[in-house]
Image 1 (cartoon, rainbow, N blue to C red):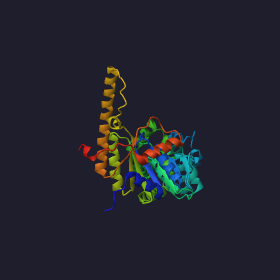
Image 2 (tube, helix red, strand yellow; image 1 turned 90 degrees about the vertical axis):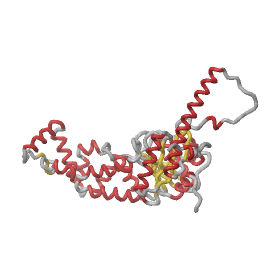
Image 3 (cartoon, rainbow, N blue to C red; image 1 turned 135 degrees about the horizontal axis):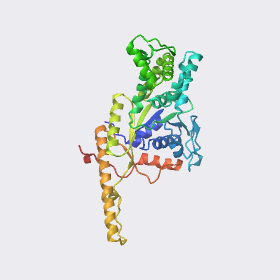
Image 4 (cartoon, one colour; image 1 turned 180 degrees about the vertical axis):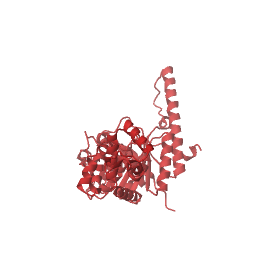
Length: 387
């Protein structure tokens, strides 16, 4: 039986051999920093790497020590680091522009210039193309398919959108495609609008009442825009669905991999466990768990020194003892949650301790990357898990 690889070795091999790495996780767990640190490490090892974030905030730019990023891939100057990357290694970074990506898809799949102009000029489309539920996730997958075919990069590291639940990245695109399936709304819109023009002749009294209510609460202009949008999208639906199928096939391929980033709380790790289960069900390649901002037990790090003792006031000593106990309880709760994750998935997580400050430059990313591949001294024991 082959020896079990350490999680750091597994992640290192993924950086060296995969062409796509997707960093997933709910918002606020350090996902963007993890994605940037992984991309930097792969670039320093000699690969040409692009890290792309869907997060509209400036987190990726900040972690790279930049003022801003745009929808165009920007080369990152690695000469500022103490040691240059291996030969051929380079790093680019960009932020996904959801609206531009959506517009490009429209331009690709509309049958003619007139149909394209109708959609791009539609008021409903202009208002919702960047805010429609699932559009960020769908466009992230669409952009991933485009970037994967670009020969400039050996590896694309995708930082997924900040969502409440990590699973939204996989499921939201399907919900968007279902929403764009005009057969769902055709039964309501077609009786009143034909090719975007209002038809006042309604066949039934119920239909007339529905139209009056819609006019009262939404306005006929809104309904007309909505009708034009869905009628124009009929010719594009198959193209959107076909691209979504291709992206799902790409994410299932062995050249891709998912890195799950989570916080150390039991609730966060429960979600990570569920996400891992769903990835397994969807036959998508899982690479590693990264549990970020782990609190270590300070009592385990104390080394006895017999060079004399400092005098501490009794009141301060009592407060320090209380703080120590609180920190130990927190570390114990996190250890049990992490141990349960390891037992249930049979995957050893990578533990990253909480840092004193946020990462805001390449040196900070190097330090964070070093922690990813070395980990804190303290590791959870599976026997400590509470079942």
